[in-house]
Image (cartoon, rainbow, N blue to C red):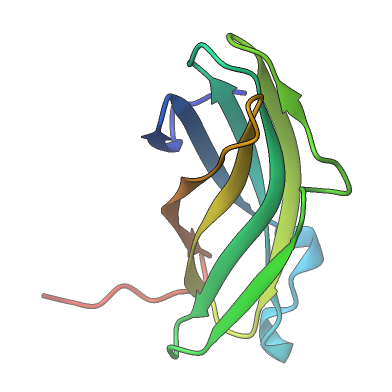
Length: 135
C-alpha cells in the first residue's frame, strides 16, 4: 500500500495506516449519497503474534450524525499477524453528506491470550462536492 497520503497511528507496536478514497462512480451527489473506500494496512512491529478479534468504528457525517459499527474481525476475517507481518484490506462507507470523519479501534489478542485495543487513526472523508469555508 502506498502510504504517501496515509493517516498512521501506532499502539503497542501495532501500526495502522489508512488511505481514504472518494468513489466518484458509486456516489450520487444529487441524491445525497457519497461513498468512500478506505485501504487499511495493519503491521505488527512487536515481538508477539497477535490476532485481530473485533473492530469498533465511529462514523460521523458533516451534520454531526454518528453511526457506531462493532463486529468480529475485518472483511470476514480475523487475521493472525506474527512479528514483522502485515495485513491489508479494503472496505467502504456511504454518507448522506459530502464529507465526514471516521475513527475506531481494533481489539487484538496476544498469543498469551491478553486482549488489548489498537487505535485506528481518525481520518477525513472529503469529496470534491464539499465547499471549503472562506477564512
